Image (tube, rainbow over all chains, first blue to last red; front, side, top):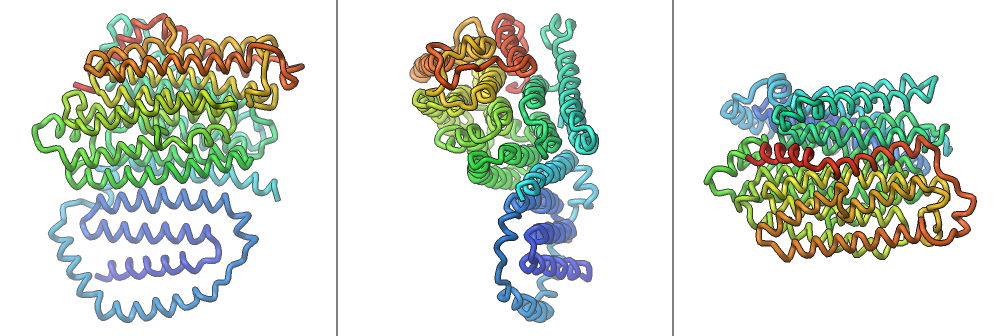
Length: 162
Length: 476
């Protein structure tokens, strides 16, 4: 229960951070951390396949695409400062949501936990990743390498053009 | 995943990681490492497939299904030609040169992953790695055309990824597994195939978009024209084949098109293949830019492979696999030749070129070999693959498709002869004056590929024996 609550809270904090961050790169990384939290929740609720796919697609692939796109538009982005006043209301909205969740969410989480018991047998994170989806990990490593080389390919040109 | 071929994925990845460090003080190390990695891999693959005992045994001992090995060899061959050509084509002072080679090697590793996996989700992950590297490689050319091509590639191929992932999700829900083998067993049984076929159709539609088949072809001419010429050769030569066409052939065999288990999907695929052949060939006739004409020619030639995959009989699959390999060879030659022309004259506009045969004889003659093979002129390799496809169509009673495929082969010959006449024959234009043949290292990859085109045509019985083994293993 505490573990779930902690993951939900972390996911919410990272999501807020993603919206409020001044730099797009930070937003992309925070979004990846939201996906990591969500995939851990999936694992814990006995849905290792959903967890692995969330980790592969959202935390891996989408993040690399975002980081690649950010590295392409970064020079333009810095020239156009954005009015961010409207985002300051978000922490207050989140606080109100947290108080409401304190009342309503425990019952929902207990219901989910009961469902998790029924669906148990999916195995641990390790078994899901290493036993069932090992080749995907290789794909993830390739994706990370591709992301790094995309940035290395684009940034030197940006630096030179400045 | 085929563990026997895992090293061909891991070693380029390792080299890609080492290159930025090794090239920090010596930029040439990037060229050397990339080329040595691919050359060593190719030599090893050739030994695996073509050692005398293997040929004498009729390729019966070939590891895995045979198709993976063949395609990994094609990936390494085109990759080697592109990296070798790039080493002498791309300017020395390019700041992202090591990253360019690393991206090429990651692309090679991802393609190896695509052809060796036996699971749809893993296939999706590797396809996406390939999409990311292709996008970055197109933007290596920082011009507005390069960025436009990359953005078109992005906006048209990433929705295709959504179709694929939705199809995979539905397949998981209906079949309970994502392995190729389970789909094959399911389609071989008598169970109602509706939802599974629907999921497969979504996945196939995604791969059709990624292949650049008509009517989803609009990204290809801009991407090929906008990218650096060696990158265009890499994309047209092998990337679109592996990221789209290979998966279509694989799905066609898993869905057992040959016994009518997914009749509507099979017919739709054949129709799109025929449409692609026609639209690509007719559009190529009108082009004035060499690279753009080659892009439309690629769309047309991919149509032949898709048409054969849609038919799905063993003979058609043999033709599709053979044409895929042939297309990789002749399109690499033609795109690299367009790069040589661009380097020598500064343009690929065919209206501004003329009489290049006298100043660039090697480029001219290798173009002739490649274009005759593309048009299906005997005894070159393209003739045999087109013959297999047309025979398969005729045998299955699809005579209209067979005749149309033959007629558009003649159209292919027509637009290539027009290109050859405009660019290489006739009188010299101002842009062609004082032009010299490109250096020997830039010619080496195209001469090698042209030799392979001739050899595959002349040694067809051996290659036929190989693709027969492949067709038997992947269909039965």
